[in-house]
Length: 409
Image (cartoon, rainbow, N blue to C red):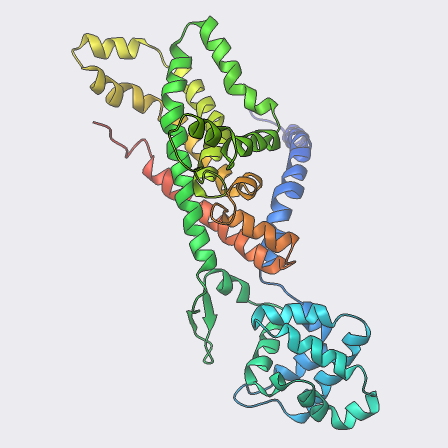
C-alpha cells in the first residue's frame, strides 16, 4: 500500500511521539544513574588529577617558579615573593594548609613552612620588599635546599599525575622520567593483599555455598523453606551488630578462647582478632548469603531429567556432575563470584573493626585519606585505580568463563 505525503508525515509524527513517550518514561532512571553513578565517578576521576590548593594559596610564587630552572636556587625575586605570600598566609591562618600540601610532596617540610610563617609574620612588608630573600633564608635553613623549591613547584601544578605516581610507588627524576620510588610500595602491597584476601573469601564462600545451595534446591519444601530463612536472616540484622558479635567471639577473652582454655586444648589465648584471619573469617560469614542466593536460583531451575538421563546412559556420578550439572550452574557460580569479589573489594567497615592494621584493605586507606588526612586527591587516585582494577578483573573473568570457550570434561 502506497501512503500519501500527509499519511507519511502523520506516521513520522506518531513515531516521534512514541519515542518521546518512551524517553520520558526512562528519564527518571537516567537522572538517577547520572546523579548517583556517572557524576560521582566523573568527580572522582577529575579530583585525582586536579589539585589547585597550592596554586590558590601562593599564586604569584607558583607563577614565577614555573619559569624557574631547578638546577639552582631561585633568584631573589622569587624568594621575596614567597616571603610576602607566606606572611600573608600566616596572618590569615592558612600557613598550616600550605604546610600540609607541601609535606605530601616532601615529607618533613611542614615544620619548615610553619616556622618560617611565624617568623615572617613579625616582619613589616616594607622590609620584606627589600630584604625578603634574606628574611626567608634566615627563617629556616631548609630554604637553601633545592628539593624544597622543587616540592613547592610540583605541588603547585594544578593538573598533575603526582597522585597516581604515588599510588603506584613511582616518582619523576630530574629529567622528568618515571622511576621506582624507594620504600614506597605501600599502596601496591595493599592492592595485592586486597586481591589475595578477596580471592580467598570468594573461594571459601563458593566452597561453602555450593553444597548448601544444592541441598536447599533439592530438599523437601518444608525443610528448604526453614533453612532459607536462616540464609536470609543476616540481611535482617545490622552489619555492625554481626561484626560486634564476631569481636565478642574472637577477642582474647572472648567466647572461643575462653572455651578452648576451659577445655585445656590451648595454654594461652590464640590471636584470632585484628589480623587477616579475622577479616577473612568475618567477611566469609557476611558475604556467604550473596553466594548462596544466585546459586540456589539457578539450581532450582535445572530440570532433574538431565541428570537422570545421563545416569541412564551409564555415566558415573562424578562425570554427571562435571559434564552435566556443573556447566548448567556456571551462570549462578559466575554471578556469585562477581557479587562476593566486588563487594569484598569495596568493604571497609568490617575490616576496620576486626582486621586491625594487618587485616585492613585498600578501601580502608581510601577512607583514611578522605576522612582523616583530607588528601582527597590521593584518595581519588586510589579509588580510580581500584575501579580500573575491578574492570580489568571483570573483563578477564568474563573471558575465562565464556561458555563458548569453557570446556569441562
